[in-house]
Each structure stands twice: as C-alpha cells, then as structure tokens.
Image (cartoon, rainbow, N blue to C red; front, top):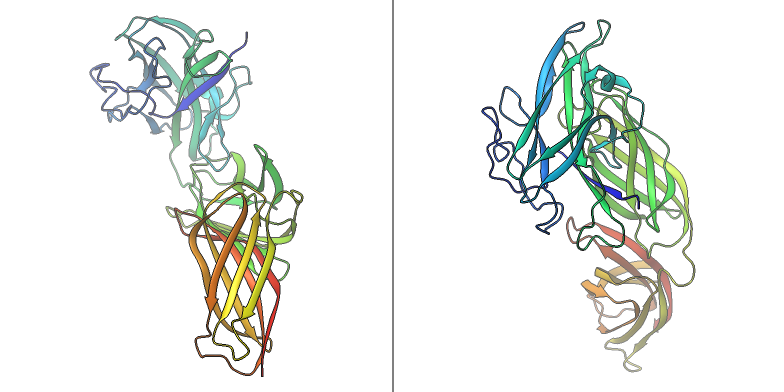
Length: 408
C-alpha cells in the first residue's frame, strides 16, 4: 500500500547526542525535540550540513558566477534501530504563510536545483552511524546576484507502520535547504494579489497570493482587517509569515471564525519585512463571504429588557444567545444603550467568557451611569470572539434588540 510522507524541514524533530564528525555534532547543529514517532521501533534520522561555521546548515554559501563549490552533508541514524533510507535533491517550495517545504522527487529540477550535483542514493545505517555525501554546486556564469534555494531530502526507503499513525503506512522524511548566495546587490521586494474566500480543511478562509519578486528571502508581518458593509471592523488579526525565498510564490491564509456571518466585506492587509523595510498592502478589497447556513453563527434567541417598576430604578436584562457553531473559548458580550438614538454607554454582560454551543443565557440589572433621564431607550447587542494569544476580537454579532424603555 502506498504510504503518505511525513517530512520535517530544517533542523528539528529528533533528539540526539551523537557526534557525527569533526565539523558538527547533531546536538550542536540544533537537532532537538520530539522524534517523528515516539515508538522505539521507528527509525530516527537526520541530514546535517558539514559547513565551515559548524552550524549544521547550508546558509548563504557564497559562490561567484561561473564557479563551483564542494559541499558535504551527513546522513545520520540517531535512533535505536537499523534504518533503510533514500536521499535525493528537490526543488524548494514555499508553504502557505511562508516556510520551506520540499517538492516531490519526481519534479523536474528548476532554478538553482539544477546547479546542485547531488546523487540519489540508497543508504543502510546501523544505529549510531552515519554516511557522509560529498556533492558540488556550480553557479552559471550569467547568474544574477541574490539568494538561491534548493533542498535535500532523506526518507525511509519504504512506508512504515507507525503506532498512532492511523490506517495508512507512512514514509518518514527529513529535509534541509541548500542556500547559495551569488555576491552583489540584492533586492528585497514582494507583491500581494487580490484576496479570495477559500476553503481550508472545511473552514472558510481569506487567501491572498504572495510572490517574492526580489532576490532575497523576506519574512513579512502585519495586520489583516476585515470590515463589514456598515464600515465596522469585524476582524483584526496579526499576520506573521515564515521565510518566502526569492522567486517563490505562496498564499497568505487567515482562517475565518466559524460563527462569522456571511455577507459582503472588505479586506485590508499591510505587510512589512522588518529586516529590509520592504512592504506591500491591500486596501479595502471586496470579498463575499458565503453563509454556512442556519446552523452556524451567533443569534439572539430571546431578549427582555424591562423596568423594575413604574418609577424605574433599574432594568432587568434577560438575554439568550444561540451559538450555532463550535464552543468559543473566550467571548465578549456587550450591551449598547441608546437614548433618543444617541449612544449613552456600552455595558459588558460578559468578558472573556466561554460561549457554549447552543443556548447561552445572560441576566443582569442595568442602571445608567448618569441615572435615568427622560427619553426613549433602545438597545443593541455585540458579541465578539477573543483571540487568547493576542487579544484580537472578531465581531460575530452586532444587532439591534427588540426592546424599548420610555422614561417620561
């Protein structure tokens, strides 16, 4: 049965204390963390660059146009069982929201991957052993200044049955980058495309094309703002991208809350690469968010806001909300009070409170801060989801309530 590939990029995923040569130990190279499988019968292995600085990475190795450079990488078995492995070179790709991922082995070499003379090889490694592979990189004479990225992969020769891995057998893999820097002036530049509403594992998402049009990697960060048709900012969230290398394209993707109502919205996004100052933005681009139907979203099930007596001292507030989606770990529920159409104050009914799936009841007593005055009091409710990490709020409901109090 064909197996699915689980591939780890960069120097992560394995616990080691093995010296792998005079230049770099796997521990010094930063290979640490939890192995791909905690089952002792699963092989654990890695690729470690034998670079001159002892970092365990091939990062910005300078090669002049028309010149070659010889490199060495170590395939290391850091586990307790024999490992039957394969290693090969691959094109570098960019994952959604940045970060290096490796292309398929069968893909035709493109860009700087064609400069890399790396052998495809089968390797048998006993526990605690390694094999060093020497290869070369040749930069064409007409290469322009900039950073060029390709990848190297090592993976299990066959699919394995991994405890806890489900019904499918799995090919365990590990990938690192080969970063070549052709000396000269480099350009930091990127572009954003028009946003569209996509689907990410069954969730609605905002997706924006991203292209690094410069000659060096960028790691942009910024803020995405979603505004409804009435001009209210219903979602404000930070965006932090991983590395996007020169010439590569990807998507900026932000998952929309399940309870967010369908409708017409505008998207604004500004991203800046702190290292270079390069920036790009989208300003009020229109999108239509599809509705998930009656079962999703937050709605008012019932409401009663009534004076306690003819000569009012306080108003009893009894509100029931229905959350048609999943439980929201932290939500704010705010009662907005108007007198003769002018906002008097906003009163929190709940702050950072769990909003359960289904019905949620809120009861309170309302007394105006400046006491009751003659006029007609009307009310509206605002419900927002709160990001527990950054505190950003996503407005899920902003609705006028069917409740009125008239004070003579």
